[in-house]
Amino acid sequence: MFNLGGFGPQILAGTVTTVELSVLSLIVSFLLGLVGASAKLSKNRAARGIATVYTTIIRGVPDLVLMLLIFYSLQIWINEFTDWLNNLQNSIDFEVQLDPFTSGVITLGFIYGAYFTETFRGAFLAVPKGQMEAGRAFGMRPFLVFRRILFPQMMRYALPGLGNNWQVILKATALVSIIGLTDVVKIAQSAGEATFRTFYFICIAGAVYLVLTTISNGVLMFLERKYMIGVRKAVL
Amino acid sequence: MIYILQNYWQALLYTDGYQITGAAMTLWLLVVSCAIGFCIALPLAIARNSKNPLIWGPVWLYGFIFRGTPLYVQLLLIYTGVYGLHFVHNTPMLAGFFRSAINCTLLSFALNTGAYTTEIFYGAIRDTAFGEVEAGRAYGMSQLTLYRRIIIPSALRRALPMYSNEVILMLHATTLAFTATVPDILKVTNDAYVATYAPFDAFGLAAVMYLCISFGLIFMFRRAERHFLAHLVV
Image (cartoon, rainbow over all chains, first blue to last red; front, side, top):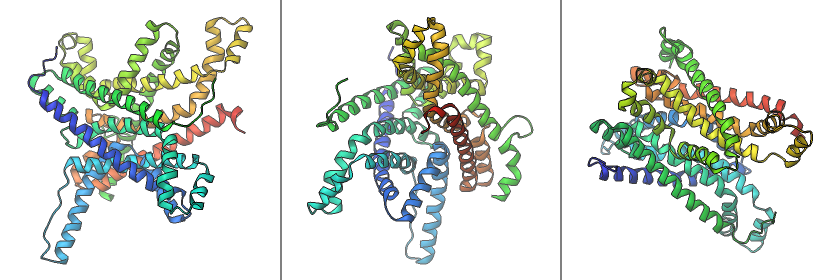
């Protein structure tokens, strides 16, 4: 039944790559989402405008298109920039090569940052204003208010959307194999081609994703219970 | 940019001279997969609400598998995996079906969107107000009439906002068709990129086209919501 034809370690390595890629993209998009949500709710009109354009465009364009766009253009832009630096000062002579993993993290983080912006915006709005005012009245600085009051309460409202976004990111990492990353999908494909058992190996890749999504479902349920501490629910 | 537009405008919009390509192909993929997905989802959503585990169990499993794995993996499985199986290879009808890229693409897209749509409709049917069902029963409606006249119309209305989201996500998912060599917008712009080596121009053009289609869909669904959910507008 479980005859992996010697591809077991590679599939495991590919799974690790998939998980690393999704966790790093989650961190990038989480931070971008916090910044974006703050910008969308700020009084500064320019910040609001930029954040709105960002979320509208990114959420209206398919992620695969954005991925190809950013992956191929980013390298050209970086090359042009380093060429410009080299021309500016001949003593500096360096170049930056983007590997699929880094550009995968950058693109996925950039794309899902827009989705996180919307999630966090709703969650920020759900925290009662009086809470923040009370924090200010205690003489807390804005960052302390954010860390101690806004963030812990906001997470409760953001968690369902966040969990959803995480599942989508996890599944979107499969797309990064199209731009050449050796993740679990890519390895399953090459293993299938080598052994003429494509169906079997792609099923294995699918099973890996099923296990990952099931585990993250469990973790999310645990986190939701943790952040719901102290909330009274109506008994129906 | 001008070069790409001059050389590829026809292929981007509807044809490259031999077959349907570009935006027409993207819309065709979207419409067919959503239509098949809808037809799968409606009966399955009703079955998912059944009390019998032998009925809702398989539907739950279908949703679990197709919503827990990436669409790209499903497409690979159907496009490259199934054709390699011996019994498919040796059955002329199945082999004929799975040899065509567009059939495989449509099948995997329809199964995927069907799983998500089932979940949407399942929630909408489950949340039907009990008073509506009781009123229907009190009128002496049979189970079939109850579903046909009361439950399904009101559930579909309530599902509309979620369903419009799913259709837009499906539009985004159709870009995967280019990995199976189906000539949709992304495939044409990828060819343009390979010919010109101007990734920003080529893929930027694709992004603008998808953005326009997305906005068009959002506009249509907003009109539909105003029509079908008129009773909810304050």
